[in-house]
Image 1 (tube, helix red, strand yellow):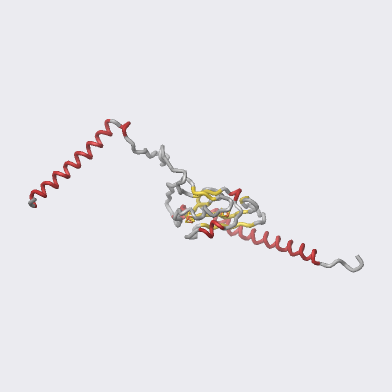
Image 2 (tube, rainbow, N blue to C red):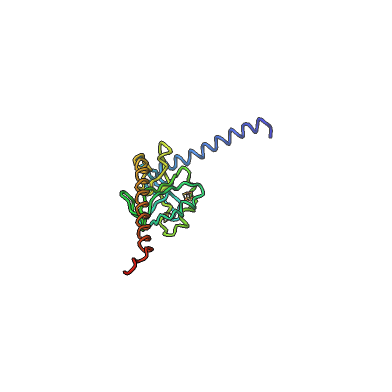
Length: 194
Ligand code: SF4
Ligand code: SF4
């Protein structure tokens, strides 16, 4: 085929593809019920209908009351995006787990690779990958999720973090002292003649 023929053939092909494409557009314009595209809601910014498989790996959620604060999920994460703090001793303002008191349980979604490796080894099956997937925000800080509140890790949460750590140190020191005192009492030999 000569260069001129090839040139005109390309113009013809382009014109044909425009006619075919616009034909589909016009067909759906006059018969909107045939449209199979899922509509995305404009007000809520959430799809009106959506199908998400049960095993979808979306944003995590935690069943706090079952958590034993064992750190296994944190250690299993290959990119270190889970951070937690808490104690076995009760302290003011803590979230109650299963025999544990938790002040911090955050997950950095900016780093997460949604691999599920944190959920699989959890002995209490209490950390899960959910259905939520359309997370967006104006800053990277919004991408850090507080699993205790199900919201972003806020400035207020950050401000309370240091305070909670101080309480944990204090209650653990007190518990340690009590244990040592109890042990001391047990080991003290009975007085002579008693
Ligand atoms: S899904 Fe993977 S990367 Fe994300 S928090 Fe869990 S272990 Fe870490
Ligand atoms: S592995 Fe499970 S029980 Fe242990 S800290 Fe993580 S969520 Fe809690």
